[in-house]
Image 1 (cartoon, rainbow, N blue to C red):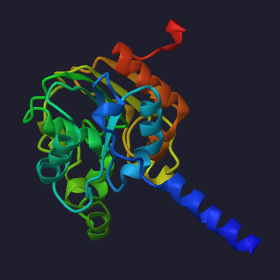
Image 2: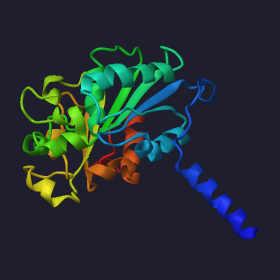
Image 3: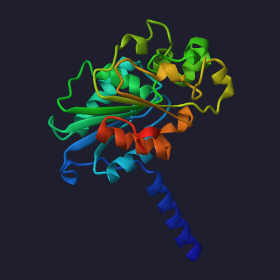
Image 4: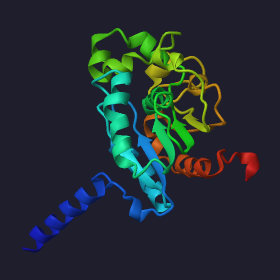
Length: 248
């Protein structure tokens, strides 16, 4: 009997810990400040859960958006999945709004912002964004297996002038970019000139018009869970700059 009770309790705790955080209502956040989180390619909203929890603890309302990143083009993902969910989540047009994105989530946002004018856009933090594409897509994008794993949107992330990231234009908003210089995939890193995080080089993470840029010793797949990255993200949302070593 005791074993059965303990097992039931353990299952409940595991489910509660792993379940996505609930939608946040305006009543819980009288400041009316919201942050939209956009996960990366082949990820899901749970991957942004630790970041979301930190934002909630700081008093922000959050919209942790799930979208089927592997099954559609970037434009379709933006218009048919991401934008409707943002509209559904925000309580009103006057809400102060920021974004935190990981990887391709940053490209989704760059596709979105010129088309949808948010009245009170405050700041954006992009984590490891392929803002100028990735050489990995140049090398592997035409292979059947790559398409199977990463879908149509993944194939759009090359480095050519006609690739989606390179056609979207500069940032016209307060943008902080954090990217890593630690790779856990040496094969992918061989395809990328210069320092990289296993998916994107430092240089190709940059975007014209960005407000600040920070490099951390973290890999692409885990940057959104790193404690220092989360701290710096919160700092940028408040101050529109990162806290560099000379500031401390």
